[in-house]
Image 1 (cartoon, rainbow, N blue to C red):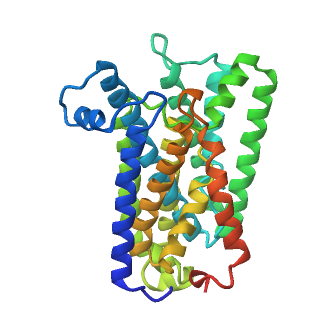
Image 2 (tube, rainbow, N blue to C red):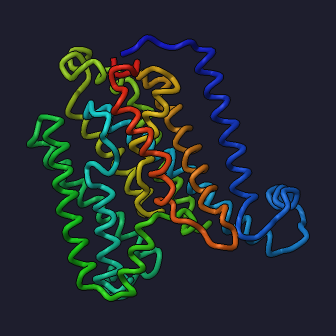
Image 3 (cartoon, one colour):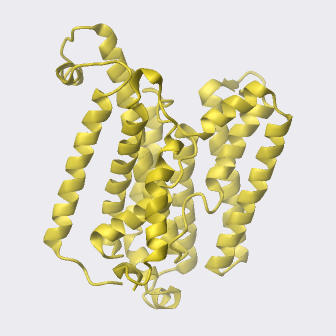
Length: 349
């Protein structure tokens, strides 16, 4: 573990990230396909009367849930990526590496392409539309997570478990390809659109459930900061410090699964946030100490997704760009830089 950087620098960085977060939240509420004055947006948020009632509906029912969904998704995926990179001691580990988001995609594919967009629970209960998609995504994620947890009892080596996760991801991707092949053109189109990622699908009614699941996952992640720091020193040293390696690893997998499944279920598979943002946080701090790294990663994830969402809505009347058309453009250069400069980067040494 590297020496702790100057506390003043840490505080300045956190304050800067919070200011950026506030500015980007305001920008996400202000910009869109409909031009709404900033003063009107402020009046709506304060509960005052505005010039047009339709503006109130757009801000409160569309832009506000979309902004909060982007913020929560970024924080969740970034923290999930950090947990996996520490648990597997692999800078290229991310939420997608264990196949959890692919499991969610398989659940959605079954709902959209095999079940016709509805999901029958009992004889009298049937889920349809976005509710069925969320249920399918959670079910798929849980099945894959359960599979990974089962193999974690058989495989003691972290690298081997990582490879098992990749293989599970390949299997689920193969099933998705078969479902796409036999599906109708309309079903394939709907599934493809969902797979591009979208924060605008979360409604005000669904937002509390999304916020609750992400908050629980982030709270548990914060409680794991001490074992995470111990794992940086190696499994044997961490065990000597009293860390239960098996329990910690399973908790990390469960937390990662919860955060990834929640985000994928509500917003679709979002690429590169979980892989790149932890490295951005490390580069800004110059340390792998999770006492500082985890909250900075959380803030960086929220800032990055809000920036990506803002770029997506900038075309205005021309429509909203898919989020996965933007995240690789920002994330891939970070990963390339990290790979090329591993020996020069302080936190790798």
